[in-house]
Length: 100
Image 1 (cartoon, rainbow, N blue to C red):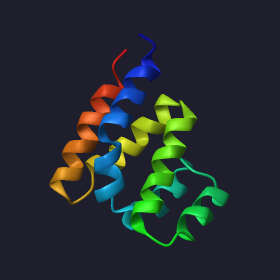
Image 2: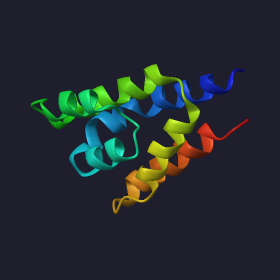
Image 3: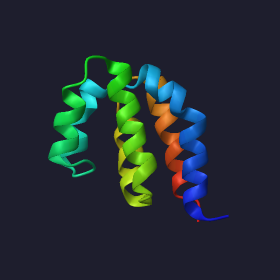
């Protein structure tokens, strides 16, 4: 199985949780500052009217990138968040992403 398939499957499995609970407003600046999204993507996400829409867009960005390194960095941001459930989700996704 191609390595991205593991990440894609994990994103599909956790997408609903991320869409509903990801505190994107706490993470979006960090995501931009480490160049996981472009300035245009950042502006587009920030202009959205709801957290769920913002979260859905960030999930779609990572689904389309197919770059394991970027996804691992995103997971590591989740792992460092103060919310324990989000940390656990980040660790699970990160572990899946680093499978060779």
